[in-house]
Image (spheres, rainbow, N blue to C red):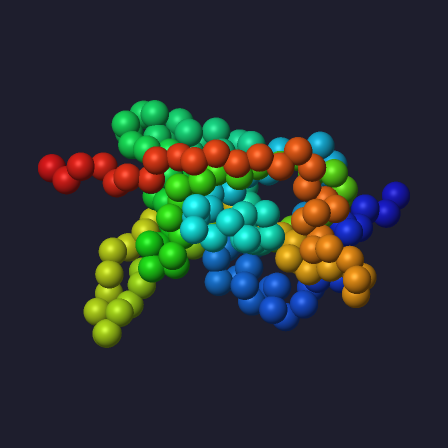
Length: 175
């Protein structure tokens, strides 16, 4: 029996998609997500146009791990997402909104654990962001692209029951 192709198949193996996934994922593999799956992402309140079109998402188990990290470490959910996913503040993601949706159609993705991040500004290295290796992340190519010239962006067709809510993103107090 042949594997199901995702509706974003045309975007999956482009050089751009592979390069972007390579930048953020360690031990990257491809897979097809099935309809009904819950997807989440942490986003920025000041960039609502990217809430659903961004390619970076997580599934239920990684979301549960981030919630547990926040609870056990007594930090905000947004801060826990930043730590567990290694989201460098220089990337302009506030991690102050959680968005979610249920998958309506099959999608092909790259998945793996987030890479360790160490930004450099003016020849100086900044803080090192080491992700939680129990968390896997999804790179979904093509969500911002239309399938046909006059169509809406793909995410309108594949994500149903979209929702969002604000979350606190404050770092823990310094000791």
